[in-house]
Image (tube, rainbow, N blue to C red; front, side, top):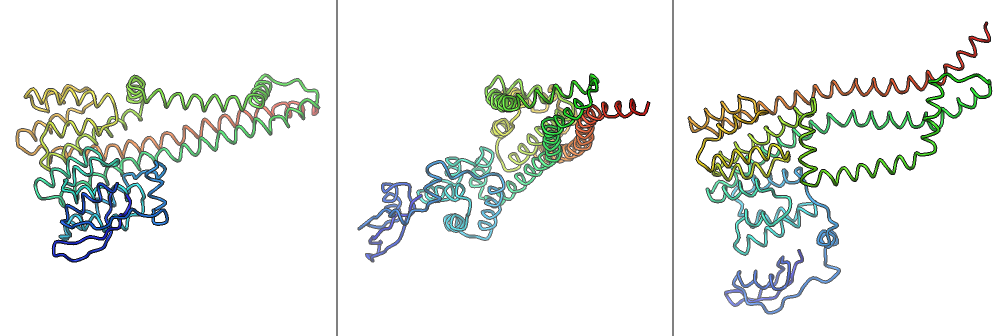
Length: 407
């Protein structure tokens, strides 16, 4: 967002000069009029004064910000508001020190909107990167005058969400690296080493065993068709990604993943952890139950869980308790419905849901660890077995020749 330079007359009749951030000259004039000054001259920034990163961001090449940047932003915003710094001054300070271009641009836009009289929640809702959960909680915090407290809750929520994601990512990283390196080694053996053995075996005139001939045939196939295999693999990956982006593909993929051993458990428990934590955070912040359910449905990525929670919301809208439809969802542990029922009857639903989320968080961590312990040996055995078969196939004719010479 560019800085417009201006010369104006303030309310006391004094000449003032300065700069104002605005998306256009019209908006700059509107902001200055709101400050009660009479504009004499208003000059847009020259090309040399333009921020290159900002220009790239405006053109769509500046990237975006993720939960890590959002977490730091939320922590700083909470600290400064808690210290009594006015919101406009807080936003101005934060946008000046922010290094991520996309977030810097978002803070500038929020600063401008708040300066024009909009609420912080309304301003954030217009920017990418701020979820419905985030904006709804900020809205509740502004309405109740406890924005700093709400931001602290958001900080904890984002930290726990990132913890689960990082656990799953780290658990999958090592096996993925082993698989890639393993297949690279196998490819190198089949394309470069097996042909050398083939020449040696052919020079001896020895008849090749069936396993050796099979490995040689596979090697020749890989040499002749490697580029086509690679293109076909990339094409399948692209087609698969496009397919799961479609509504039908997303539903099919989610159902398959939910039914898989280990992975299904992690997906289900992870979704339940997100649901209970989000609900608990929103209810404790004063957001109505139906609004909280709406945000939860938008927050959860799994289509089957979304559909089931939509049924729960519809029942709640009809006047039923939340525990009743939750108890009918097959993959929801009975403990969830029971604790929700207790929370509803005692008026402590928010704290009950937060306790349930902690239980699910621990279960997800345990499932991720178990998956890692199981996947690693399976990957090693499969890759080691392939390498062993190739080596046996190549050395078998040599051993047979040596045995025949000894006879």
